[in-house]
Image (spheres, rainbow, N blue to C red):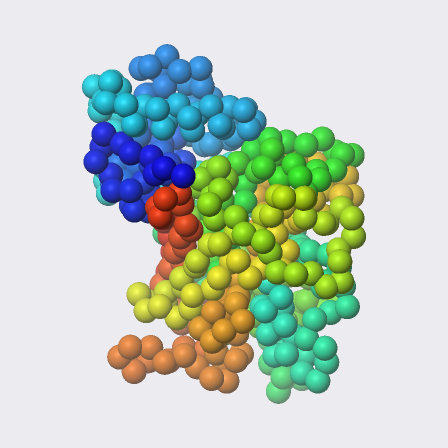
Length: 409
């Protein structure tokens, strides 16, 4: 497939090149309200302003401080907007009309790109689940009996989903160290990260229906990066008999750029073999694999500590969506779901510190002589990712980053 070209002179291998065209919401120092933009190299195109200038039919949907109105238009509009953007940016005849609506990406402020509806977090990496099983349930099978039969997940708190760059206050709560007879209250001492990939729903689905695996691309608008921060000590005490609550609900960071699903066509790969074969509603659609060859990188204070491969994920995002709705649960525009921690089989491929440090028993060594079992106040975690594009192009996701602040109170 030919790599798209642009009169902007953006290199074909630029992570935000014309093969990508991710969507975000930005504002500029002129105090104009936040608005939808499309990243092209070092530039951001003001989508609504450009659409009004060229009388595009999607101008009204793009004229909003979030992506939701545009996402709600559905897949036909998504494909039409992307085709229009490609035409505008590749044909020099549009340069004069579009130049006034381009701003330098380095000078904009990025915002949460969508108004979040519901938020679901899955647990779909076999390597991550097995690693945690060995750490937390020694002497028992690493995977629970249900793990290979369904994508395990839980409902998160949408009100604490924050955009990259938002500082993360260390959470307070109850924890019970193994040596203590009674629980104690205080700041989490085992603050962790979870490197994940997120998916945002554009086209809704009614309550009472089901979204089959084959309809994944008809409902999911795009893909972004997630750091689902985790207080392991709070989580361990509260997790019995239910699931994640205060140990997870204090913050979930997301990247500001949403990569259109269509931009990842060259990143699609077959997922790992499943054994046993999933139930019929979870089986991959014939000829439509939704494994994705995304390469993540986790940095702690600028130092790379892990490179998790998303292609190793046992359950795909299409299967996750099918399972999420199989009981008749509805989908709304702006609903998001995350993959769960991405971990691979090799050393340095784990997407959380609890795995990388063996639950703190083998702290990571950092440049300058420091070590980390879990996060300390002042630490900054950054997750980046890329995927293969057409003709050797690279599809970039930007970054999701956050700095840890001391607990309050």
